[in-house]
Image (tube, rainbow, N blue to C red):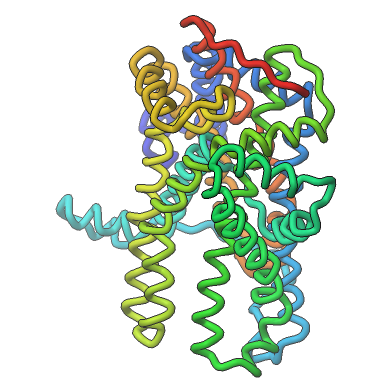
Length: 435
């Protein structure tokens, strides 16, 4: 890439120096972008909010680190307990090798050949995966940016035991909001909570034992179903935590005081207004991702080509479509959280927001997408350079949650600040919370 700057090459500048020129230009362009974009004030306020309440960053870091630690610990556990033929191929020596572009690029003569060579290159696949991860992270700012597994298993156990009466608060809020139908939602939530408790057991250290004592097909079918039900609880739990974080930012914007326990109770009550939108999102996600995956693993588990095509469809079609859906309806969740409206009214308010502030929302999407893409590229590049099965990659996997959580916390706080600033410019609704 550096050799594509012919002026620098003609001047006889060394490759290392040319790299510094490129990095310096990138930093200057970034500074110019952040200084001139129309949502810079909200981005600044979001950063100030995270500094005022580091708990926002801390909570996201805790959840991300728990997930990363579970994955790393599981791989290390399998490495030491499984037979040599079945254990993960971990390497403890330090190595570094970045993916390169395809050698077919030098043989390309037509546009089709060039595109095929680019598309098959490992570096292109890395960028493609980073772009998809960034798009999902941006969509998560408007919906659920938190990865709650395996922490969700502990949360499910606390919910079932009515820890600090939060279960009672949730049940009353659902019954008050939905009447008799609230009992159905409550029972469905309890079923998903039980699945969330079973998931770490099913996919954790006990998996090798289960593979030996349980029929393979039965284990596959039940694991797919439990994984889906557990994901629903993980998603709903993540939405509740995100509501809690948004209310914390809102309290900073309005200068309100609160206690963490009372704020969590407010978040649980507000969750009863967001649950309709969350159910709609879960239905769309199930139709696009979960049901095709469960169908392939349950009924066509012996057709390897069909299973691989299903997973390819999920990565190239379903996940981008779900992220696009969430970005197109960016203000629904925050409107329901702050204003306790019905879903149809929230939809109308969303369309009004797009007409009045679509330009600012577009810029926020671009800025957030840029940050998440850079962070994702850095993560994927280092994992590819170290090797995903190396000790250095495992160590980086434990450090990366700090960086990813900071960017997510910054963007989430900035989004709340931007939403309130846009509302303030058009006769804002007065919202009063009892903290």
